[in-house]
Image 1 (tube, helix red, strand yellow):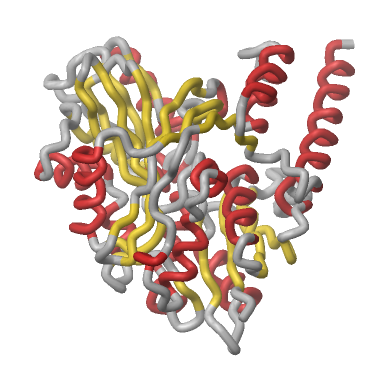
Image 2: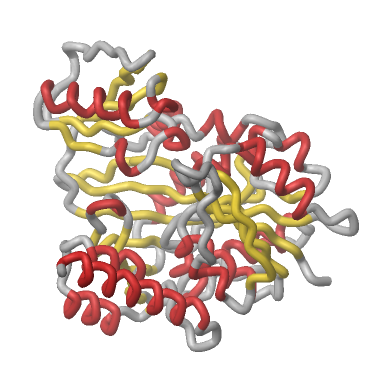
Length: 401
């Protein structure tokens, strides 16, 4: 039987990681590419993305980002197959919550990530404050934090906030990397909140999580799969180098290796088990002055998850097999050995935005064991990426002239 899957997301690197993972099962994959409308024409902006050049992609459909009604309409009328259920793999917070908000309508035609088979569970648990409360209950250190409601662009900063602090949207589905900011003073926090409220209509009524700032010695992540009861977490990821600019907070280079602290990982597993989530998840955490702090839990595939696939534990394939009745105890659940990975897209953008030299990008790419785009078995995406950056380089040179 040929399984069918829909991969939904905004960035091509994450989507391509899921596509290539599913290719190991021979899945027929449809991409739903989240994009924006041209401010002048009102038309959706759609250029064939890098991952659509993969030989494993059957077709690519564009959808307006943050338009849940449009996304669900595409799923039901262009992706549903009356002969078999299709798998949905959300690759960002918006798509994960949009699918969850319409779970009762979609579940007849699709296998979807879910919390206890109930609509609204993913949205409920994507709340960062609620996650921190559960983490504390399980003995995981978290930073002191408060929530500042922004209503109609107006807000009040509590006197209890200490500086420096770190501000971000409480629900990342309404935010973006632009909502992340270290604020050294009350004036900087006030300016950032005003910026958020003015930047986008949807942000005039949001909740901003303000956390005690901690110096980060090392950032980590781990990914796993849960069938709702059993939880598999096969390894850990250490962030060697983080991106800047438009990709602030995203791993540029990292290292994947077997679980080093089983007690810590078991607490993350218990957290997912308590929630009752079924699907692929990602946990971010960090070390500061010898203490490991829980950061957040993402109920979707994480950006560096392809490193796990390349190390022999294919989480998207595990989800397909488990949801169709296979016992996950019979599947490989542990990473053996270690490897470094490099995100070529982030590297090229770092260079284009002036954060790295082209020589350094080439060095990191050469030194890393795992690449997220380059693949001899599937060369189309790499050719498309090279062509795209060649055009950008020429355009940049002409701009200087």
